Length: 283
Length: 207
Image 1 (cartoon, rainbow over the protein chains, first blue to last red):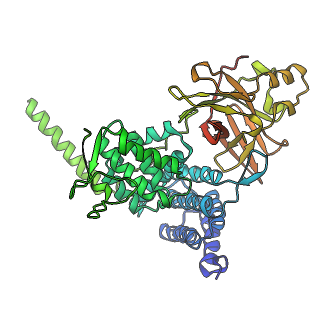
Image 2: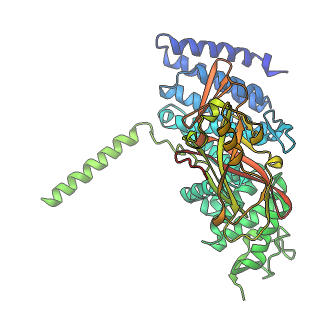
Image 3: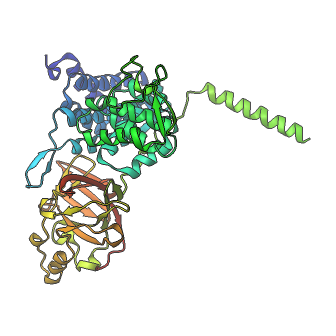
C-alpha cells in the first residue's frame, strides 16, 4: 500500500495544515501542538522507512517552511525533520539519485555527491536547532541521531578526500581516537557502507601518533571494505602495505604468535581475529 | 576568613549545580558545526586552492556574473609537496562542476564561449583561463581562472560572495564558502577526481 494514501499520510497532511495554522494564530495548547508536530515527524520517518525518500524530502521541505522554530517544541520537531530529510538524501545518493552533474563529455549524469551536499545542508540546519531544542521533552534522544549525522558527514568528506576538514573533526572528537570506542559507536549507528571510510580516516590520523590504534583502524577498514562501494583496492593495498612493512611494529597472533596476514580476517591456526593481534617492535 | 570565603563559594557552587541538575538539561551535544570544506586541499599527489575574487572587476573591468552570466573561480593546481607523479589537467576533459548546498550542480563554460560587450574583458577572460597543462610542483603553481555557467538570467544570482537560486517562489541563498568544486585530472595516466571548497575573498590581480 502506498503511504501516500495511507491513513497516516492523510492525517499527516491534516496535521501539517493544523501546525501551520497554530503557528500563525493564537497560542495553542502545548500538548495539542506537540502531538501534531510528533505526528508530522512520524510521517516523515514512515516515508523514509518505506523507502519513499523523495516524498520524505518534499514533505520535510514543506514542514520546515511552515513550522515555527522559535520555541523548544518547534525547534525539536524541525531538527527531527531536518535529520529525516538529510537521511533521505543520504539514502537517495546510494539507491536512486535524481540530482545530476555533468561528466567530461558534458552529459548530465546522476550525482550521489549532489545528494550528499543536500544531506549536509539539512544536517547543518539540524545542528543549528540543537541548542533551542535541548529543553524540549525527548530532546536527549536526539544526541545519538546528531552524532550519526556528524559521522555521515565525516564519511562524505573522507570520500571526497577533503583532508583539512576530516583532520579538524577527528582532532575535535577525541573519543574516536580509541578503536574500541569508535567501533562500538559505528556499529550502533546506521552507517553501513560508510564504516571503511571512517576507519581509514582514523587510521590516517593515528598512524603517526599511536601505531597500535592505527593498526586496529587499518584492520577494521580492510575487514569492512567489501561492504563499501568506491572504497578501492588501491586504498586497501595502502593499508596492507603499512601493516606489513611501513609500521615500526609487527603484529602477531596472541595465541600462536603467527605474524599477521592482513589479507585474511583471522589467524589461520586458531581463528583469532586480526584486530586482536598484538604489536611488538619490528626486528 | 579565607577559609570561610572558600567554603561559601563551594556551597554556592554545589547549590547552583543542584539547581541546574533539577532542570531539564540545556546541553546541546553535537551541535558544533561540522568543519567547513577547506578551500585549500592536498589529496595524495594533487594540491589545489580555489578562490572567488569578489573584486574580480579589477581584473576584467566588468562584473562577470552580471555581464556574462558566469562565476569566475581562480584555481591554483599543482603537484603536492613531496609527491613524484605526473599530473595532467585538461579543462575540456575536466568536467568542472560547482556543487551548491541544496544539491544544485553548476557546469563550467569554456573561456572562448564567454562574451561580454567589452573587447578587453573578453580578452582577459581567455588570457587568464586555466588551460591544458602538465601540472608544475606546488611551489611554482599559479592561479588561473575557470568559469561556471550561471545560465539564463532569473535562476542563479551571485552577489558579494553569495549565490542565490530561485526555486519557484522561494529564493535560496548560500555563502560561496559552502559550495564544493569537483573536477577530473590524470595522475600517472589514470583518471582521478579532485574536490576542494571555495573561498570568496578580495585581492584580485592580473597575473
